[in-house]
Length: 292
Image (cartoon, rainbow, N blue to C red; front, side):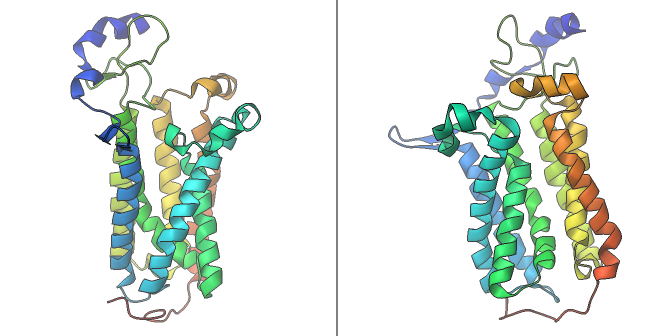
């Protein structure tokens, strides 16, 4: 199989020919990377869409709360994402190179860690303003696909987190994926994730928000996102190359670290969906000041 893949790799798209560069703008003394722009785009577009959601009857918070949420959420995503990466994917860093933990510009973020950080930031905001934490979480989950989409596209532009070797027609020959020998064509798993976790999940969340009464059942929208993301990520991991330092986990269990981390999400999501009707209650048309 590998011989066949290597034999046809020359017929596939060469990543170097796409003209992609991790650096979006290089001023010599200062660089702006696409990965940073992906975070900014996800946050700003997510904030804009959140205001659209809050303009509908039954919103769990007002415009002023949403403005505060941008700060809380950004901090929670960045800190949680980085700490999650260190704990889940590179725990040796804590002992061997602890200063590397704060070098966010070198890359290394975990969605699962960022999700935990986001949940905690929403809890702190809700507690400070005496709001319903779970209903806010529902609304925030509707904008999460934006960040997932831009983040995965940035992964592709960076030529990182590529997939397993393949002979499919759309395979891409990335750079520096093997220590020796010719580079094999690989699944562009970053784009698979952008499509499933970004585009598909956004469509699903939009349908349940705009076309059903899910937003009046606390926890249902959050459950749909958790279940949907967990299933999408679990599926794509079969096409993704495991992290070099965690190959042992795949050899021992047959599952990637990302898949193991998705299992609790799938269970939690299914639970929130199944119990959502029992939490349904009458809500006020709007909370706080006008969001018009």
